[in-house]
Image: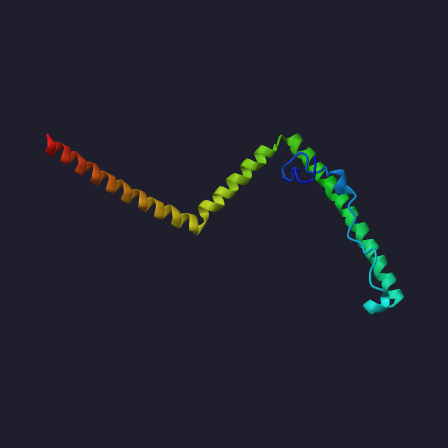
Length: 139
C-alpha cells in the first residue's frame, strides 16, 4: 500500500506497522553546506555540532522504533480484549456527540430550531383552518 492511502487511524489494527519507506527515513542532513568560516563557527565547534546532530538523529530513529513497537503491542492488547476499530469509533462519536450537546452553540441552535418549529407548526395549523373554512364556505 502506498503511504498516501495508508490507514492512519489510531484504532487501526495496522497502526503499528510502518511501510518500508517510513522505517528507514533519515532525518534531514546537510549534504553540502556553508564552510565554518561562513557560519562563524570554528572547526571544533562545527565538529561538536555534527556529533550532536548525529546523536539526535540516532535518538529519533530509536524513538520511532519504540513507538512502532508500542503501537503494535497496543493493537495486540486491543485485539485480545475484543476492542475493534469500530468500537473505538463508536466511543469517539459518542464522546464527541456529548461534547456537542453540552456546547452553548448547540443549545442556542436547538432553542432557535425549536422556536422555528413551533412557529411553523402554528402557521400551518392556521393555514389549515383557513383552508377548511374556505372549503366549508364553498359547499
